[in-house]
Length: 291
Image (cartoon, rainbow, N blue to C red; front, side, top):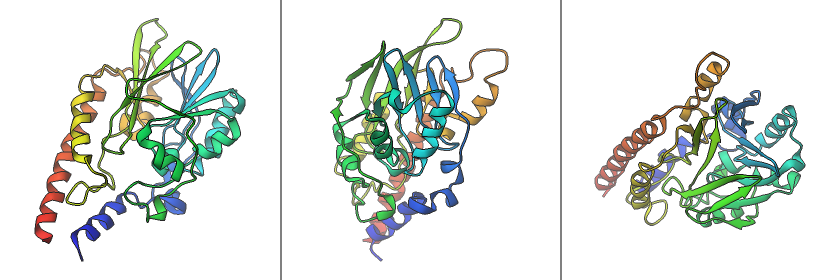
């Protein structure tokens, strides 16, 4: 077996939860959970394992990520539980075009008629419904969805007094987008939300046949870039990345909001950078051995 064939198969196993077996192999991804207010106007409306964030504004609401295709119904049910009508959703934002975060976008867009905003690097994945570089793997595909507006690195999306800033942090995907915006805690203190797209390798090929040209350089640039970010409310597409369940349990206890966690974001990214370096070395070594 050629190295590239072995590597694709091994990497694909990481994301083998795609499609109809997702809820069986990773139950938390499709496990319903009650929606709740995280901080200020930010609500969690996703499943136990896959995040979906609802941000309320005076001019309508913004929804960031939806999850698996089948999760669309769960997200819509959670919106209804907190009194949000589908027509209230004016903008759809996305972290990246993978089936486990973008799979439900097409359904939500059809039901809400909201405007979908994406980076240029994610347009192909979203509009084709594929995993770029692994298009032949149908298990990683999802319903395609049309992008209405492209946002550049540093671009601003504003609605009802809330301004979201897009930061292109490629590697995990070519147009991986990290979103930040300001919030206030109940005591009036100011904080900054950072929804980090991800920098995990997952099913990506790094070497010798990269998922896309320049992927290694993109990862390294992202690690350097995000070290400058200031975000003390760290959130992410996968709930375990920021211990959503553990922090949720502490919300009603006396003291500071547990989602305000200075240093948590940078500690997480440091872990992903170390994992990236290890995986890169392993893939490079495997490539040399297979020659």
